[in-house]
Image (tube, rainbow, N blue to C red; front, side, top):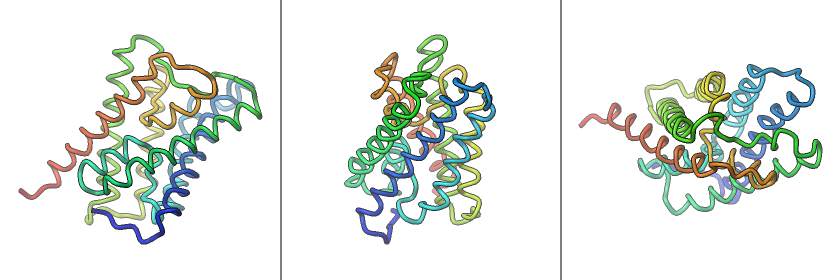
Length: 221
């Protein structure tokens, strides 16, 4: 199990700030593109990937840089993180995402529902997409963040690239959230709750499956 050396309050603030940055930059890119048509879908996906990469680089040693309730849950499920810290991490992540959405609304108004995620087609299609996208993401996270054979210096790059990769092709269909906090903040402030359950249930299941899949590969038994 991962043992962090920083005080717990600092871990929580790192999770709060990292999730804040994720929503502020990523959803901010959606809003600015809607207003100016200057960023493009590629730019939005890249914005999400870059902010994840940056925040992991600067806070990974403080809190493990989850920024995602599904990631926190999967880390605990596979004994890389203590269960007693799960709820405080979730609260910090949700607060960070909500503050980011609130500031975006103050700056721009309720443009593009503040970047809220909703299914473009059927709920079942988006559910399975979110589940599998999150499974892929969690598999990569465990591979680069916990495996002693992996190059830790590249962890932030690989995780950020995975977020951007998933968002590039699946974003127009499901929103490619892969993160309950990322979806919750904009939904809360814009009141966009359409099929919101997808963006909790699918990432939680997907992250768990991705973590278990990596555990099966990594196990020597």
